[in-house]
Length: 44
Image (cartoon, rainbow, N blue to C red; front, side, top):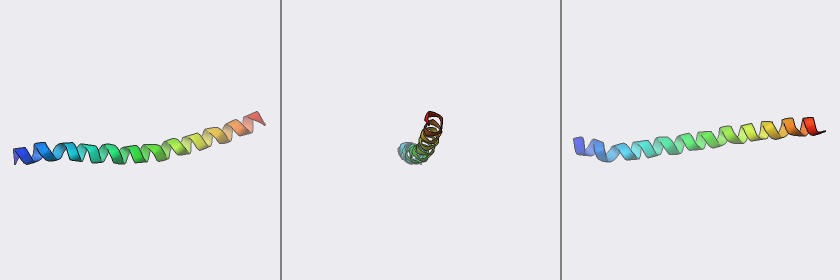
C-alpha cells in the first residue's frame, strides 16, 4: 500500500500541475487580451 501511494503520488502531482497550467494559460490569455485592449484604448 505504501509503495502504491509512493508510485501514484507523482502522477497525481503531475496531473494537478498540468491542469493548473491549463487554467493558468486561460487566465494569462484573458489578462493579455485585457492588457492589449487597454493599451489600444490608451494609445489611440
